Image (cartoon, rainbow, N blue to C red; front, side, top):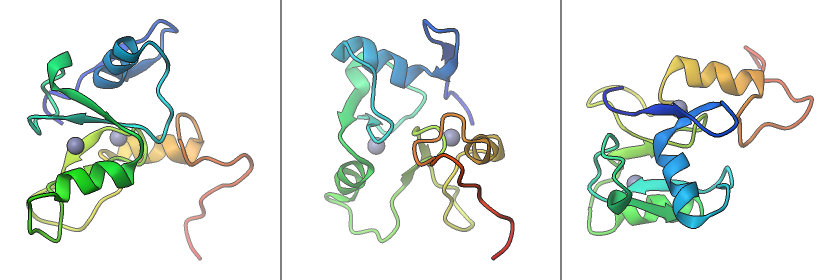
Length: 124
Ligand SMILES: [Zn+2]
Ligand SMILES: [Zn+2]
């Protein structure tokens, strides 16, 4: 995806720049359910003026739907990395920004919804 920047945090882990910047702004680590929203709706603009914190995906989605009579939001929040990503112009609803993110959640690493010992199966 164009512009979405990953940088290393102080623990040397590659994470989204917007989330690391927000943690610096509020002085604490973000909880996995918290969403960093881009005020100008440009996910590549990680200027601190452009970042806004929402408590949950539901809150965040409500914000995007405000003032818009669209059934489908223009952005969704990736279930893997928690970053908001534009919906593709065509195609189905997606949960993850990239296949890489999807695989990350299968491995359990960095997955906010991961439960110990629970694995997603290919069928069923
Ligand atoms: Zn947003
Ligand atoms: Zn992602």
